[in-house]
Image (cartoon, rainbow, N blue to C red; front, top):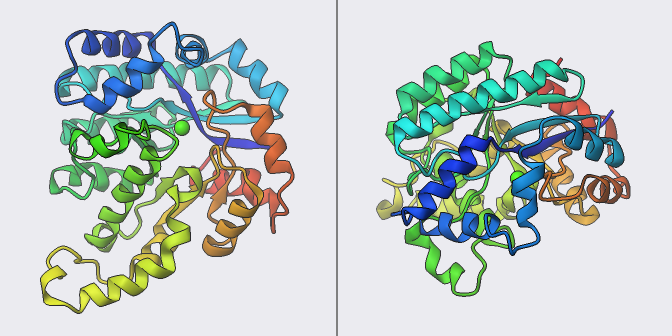
Length: 336
Ligand code: CA
């Protein structure tokens, strides 16, 4: 049994709305222009992914899963989802995406499970949609990192965190391009996408939540951080030591309000898929740091190839392959 836990889809309405946003100049979304402008350019070979594989929730996807040896995909809306739109449009597109995805899960219950899309731009509506999505059978929610340059430690998003914790729905913080205030040094060398910019910005997102004390207020909140935890496991020792220095110096105290060292929250509230990072030394390192109960397999379809990721993962000497390939995903996302 092999479950892949970070697998993407899109709806025709979402892609249409992205096109319109680009046509309108995408004000305030310069990173989105670089990211989606690339994928919607028919001259780019990888653009075919957007046009075909993301939109398919049936035969093509199942064929690629069968070829790769993936039994089940945990599917959610591709980055940056609806977070680039005005609140009302984002809300409507998210609701439609949840209806479409839950329909595909009902059609293929043995092969698909899904996470909800929400529009964090309207936090109270997003919290209600989370509850509706649970009723539809979706198992958590994806947040494609920053929303208009804001992060989930912002007090405005508390209703979303409250709903996710009380409904027992994990929040998958998935990368997107850095916001305009962070973009330029990346874009000058075309490093704003998955080569480096995604993980830098997403790790920042997670760390902002940790040091600001989000997990003191929401101790049962589960966060899923793909791409082997966006590099954070490698940093935990240094982060904890330097946090202890800063926490003892008056000037940084107002910013670092977490009650405990960051690593403790990381090892209690976070779960770590191997999406696009099924590299033997890195996976074994992360298993050593976070433990065999927090690490789970993912492909990152369709941006990565099912067969190639499965083959690469197959070469890893894991302490507990059953936990990695399915038991942890089943437990964390409450899969049937
Ligand atoms: Ca992904």
